[in-house]
Image (tube, rainbow, N blue to C red):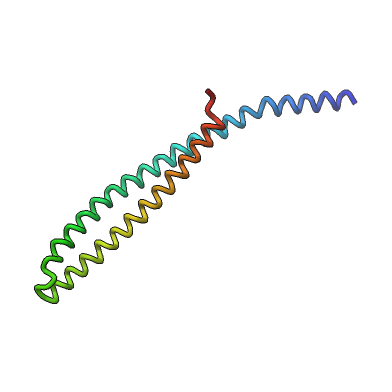
Amino acid sequence: MKPMISSLSALAAVFVIAMPSASALTCAQQAADLQNRQIEVQEIAEARLALVDEVEAAGDAWEDVEVHRLASKSHAQVADEAKVKYDALKADLFQKETDLQSMVVSLNDEVAAYNSKCVKD
């Protein structure tokens, strides 16, 4: 019976010693994943910012042609097309903004989980 206890003790010791190593590996993987997610969020934020400029330009273009709407049917058609483009860009911007906010909330939750598990005071 004694060899069995020794074997179990040795196995438990190996497990206890290996556990922090496995945990550290998991923390290292989480840190790498968090960095990748931060880069992804930053890229989406930059794309969103570029889209803001496009939306503003499309809005200005629509306002410029809207003034001439009553001049003729062709002017009204140009104004309608500009309005459709402007509205589509606004919808795209709204979707990107919503996605970005969702990603940031998720990333913040992941960072908090990482900090509570992996960061020592």
